[in-house]
Structures are given as C-alpha cells and as structure tokens.
Length: 116
Image (cartoon, rainbow, N blue to C red; front, side, top):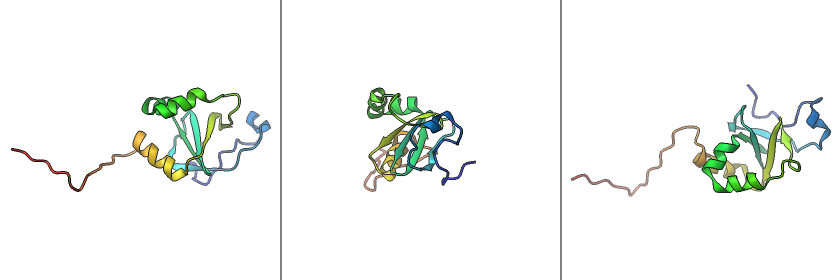
C-alpha cells in the first residue's frame, strides 16, 4: 500500500521519464484510486479518480476533459494528468460532494418535520 508521501513521478526507466519532470506531489489519502484513469493535481496534492464518473457527475469536469489535449498534458503513472488552480482543500471538498467515499449526512438546525 502506497504512503501518502509517495510521489507521482514515474519510476526511472519508464518511457514517460523522457518527458519533463513534473513537480513532486503527494497522493491524496482519500481520493487516490489505484485503478483510476485520470489524475488531477491541486497544489502539491494528486487525486487519481475515474474520468467517466467525474464527467457524469459534473458538466464542468465533462467540458474540461473534452477540451484537454492529450498530446499536451502530462501523465502520471500512465494516466492523463491535469493541473487545477484550486487548492487541495477546495478540490477535496468538491469531490466529497460529487464522489463521496463514505456516508455523509447534512442536517439543518432549523429543519422540522410535522406529522399529522
């Protein structure tokens, strides 16, 4: 099991090592899925997810992936990688809404239910 401090740089000898090195980033502990097929980086944190699921859940992601040029963007461990200008905390909060990894309940303090 990979530690959160592992980098997303390809191992030496990999064909991708001929491309310019990406900044070292750490894997997000909640949203690094070993079989994911897209890597999003925010700050120095990498998130590996499922492109199809993100596209289905969000028109913003769908449009972003459609506009991305696979020949220009970097790859991380064989996955296309996109760098976002968002902070890791903001991206994680968005992902927790779009792709929850555990049950989360939201209760409004003034919410009341009347049964007659």
